[in-house]
Image (cartoon, rainbow, N blue to C red):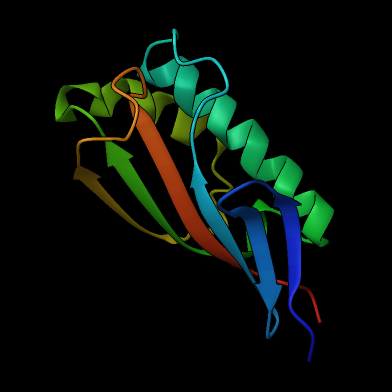
Length: 117
C-alpha cells in the first residue's frame, strides 16, 4: 500500500493518504486578518478542497481537533462549523485553547477522514 502526500510544502504535506484514511495537517486561514468565524470558514473551504482532492468529503470525517488561540472565540468558530457540518455524519471532535505558531491565527484544525471503498 502506497503513501500519497497532497499539497507538499517545505515542512509538511497538507494531507497524507494511507490505509484508507486521509490525515489532514493543521489547517490555518490564508487570511489571518479575519476574526475566528472568518478564519474557520476559510479553513473549512481548505478542508473541503483537500478532501475532494483525496477523493472523499466531509461526510466521511471521522475526527477533528480544533485549536483556538482564545476560548472566547468559540461562538464565532462554532457558527462557521455549524454552517459547514454534515448533520447526518458528525465527526468526533475536540476543541482546546492553545498558543498557535502565528499570533494572528485564531483557529487551527486537523482531522482524519475515511476514503470511500
